[in-house]
Length: 363
Ligand SMILES: Cc1cc2nc3c(=O)[nH]c(=O)nc-3n(C[C@H](O)[C@H](O)[C@H](O)COP(=O)(O)O)c2cc1C
Figure 1 (tube, rainbow, N blue to C red):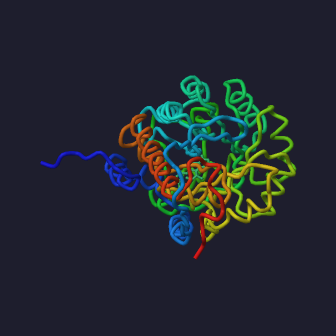
Figure 2: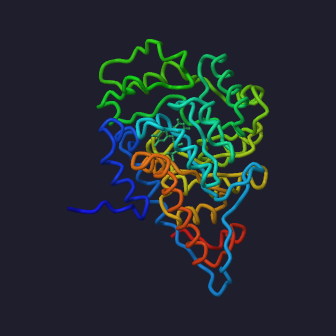
Figure 3: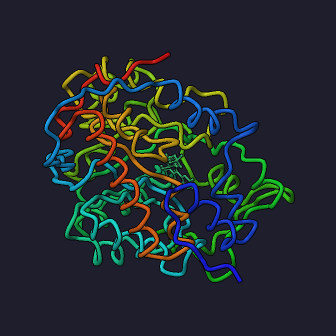
């Protein structure tokens, strides 16, 4: 008999998680769009960046804490917004929020969460929580979501701009992805009874986006989104310097360099490759965060060296959740934090402010 071994890195969490998930959930979490080129390249791109460590620096005392939007975090690793977390574990987003709070970092709650804004807010309020917004065709519904997030104590509004329509994830199409009965979009309760007219052979989520989300959204709508609450605006899904600048001109306080984990436009540039241009474009007018393919402490270090203030972690959080609920998510965050701590020490940095662009070279 083999003794179950506690995973020692995020890849081992992935393998273990796959044993805990239904085929439909596994495919929904893992998939990228079309040929999954961007999904793979988000990972492969990190290998093209080489570290140039400094030696003989006193790194006996180290500090990973930072501030984003003026909010204090114990580590520069936030939890990316991800839909349908109850597919991984019955506690879903509640478990994720608790783990984030214990680790002293921020969770971004998806519009498409399976736990309510208010429930999540009530467990995680020792650390900041952000709310991710999809702008629906129904403006009153969109307004209500933002007002609820603000009232519940969320501290930033993260507007996702890379999904006017849902990218085609062929595994979901094949599975005709739908939520299992009894699981619902907890913040869109009024919509759960809606007849979504999806065609047989289609992903239910694709049909939802087509019907409910507003594909006509443009830059000028950013003012409207900001008028809904005093929350600082974070724009997620930027891959170009000119777009980043435009987001800032329209009021964004931070931008997230993201290709939605390779789930939207296949062939889009790997996020780590897009980062430098965005950082150069916005300068110190806004904070830049990045997500996509972060699996090792050295990936976080490379992102920070290229100018990101912090990173967001996506799928590994779902793997932790599937394996062990709150404790699993907490352990995934701990593993990555400890790897980052070691990586910065080995690079001759004692704190995040010591990390600069001279530490990294693209070959
Ligand atoms: C299962 C899943 C669901 C997601 N749902 C959302 C979402 O609701 N809103 C959003 O802005 N991004 C969503 N994303 C994208 C993530 O926020 C993030 O950009 C991406 O997962 C980061 O890449 P990584 O998974 O390689 O770490 C989702 C990603 C996954 C894997």
